[in-house]
Length: 338
Ligand code: ADP
Ligand code: MG
Image (cartoon, rainbow, N blue to C red; front, side):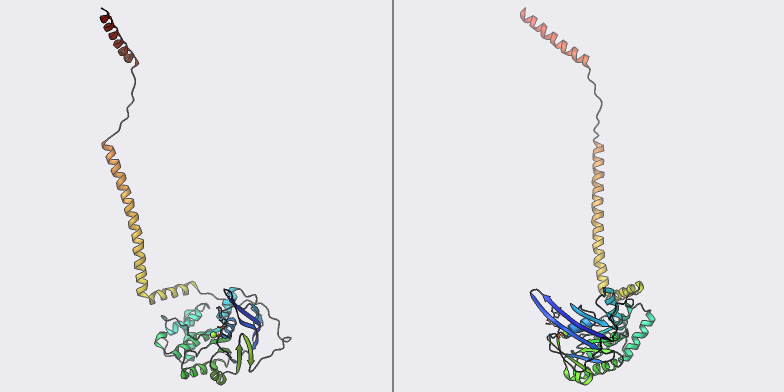
């Protein structure tokens, strides 16, 4: 059972504060097909994102199977999104370079399930949406309706308790819309499906409950679910399951990604190696030139050796030479006198 209790959400952008949800309370049965209708900007997507754990509420509480999400940490939200919720978007959000089978399988990789089991479950889910024979196509080789069915298979492969769909038929023609709605109705037989739609006719025809939103408030609920709060266990905080990807899975996913974009990978590797080789070349050149200059210096200097020898001064000879010159002067003076 999913309960939304007095949830409020405001978006602040610059000076503008927009109230997306204004004190919304709703209880959902475990097993129903709810359509959320309302004009654009009435808070439908915000409501769905909050229920799906893609966005956080400012105030109030979201209670899932008597577990309050108030104290959820990031990893609890991860586990909640991974195990309890399946999401279907208007724009499919499939990975274009992966096959249909890999797209569905990918939703299981972070659940830590073995490869063969993942494949089996993905095939099973695709079979259920009527695409068992198109496993190896790429999403861009399919029609819009088929792509949305792949997205539904991806949302269901984890066997979530709750399936959320934001305008799943928004980009489809009326005939394919009907196919997708039939499928969602089938899905809603054993789980809760909450679907946002712009199309009141489809909602009337397929959903068992229609909730109308306007300006972030519920203005109408065709089949409200009132619970006596005194009989419901008080919400508690519990740990969710594990969400992790094994190292090998992560490695093989990255390798797969590299393989699908061969040209880009080769080009990046080439460009990277040019850079590395360039730096190595410049380093080698500068080292070589330095070594060359050192060598030249050594060679040149060795041909002109500078030798510093010890020198001594012979004081006696200096004195005697000075004396003798003095004597000569004396003789010449004497000659002048004569
Ligand atoms: P709906 O899906 O019914 O068209 P939304 O839930 O997307 O409406 O939006 C409700 C209101 O919240 C709108 O006024 C919208 O402009 C505003 N809003 C939604 N998302 C954001 C966001 N990320 N940042 C700011 N404002 C937002
Ligand atoms: Mg919307």
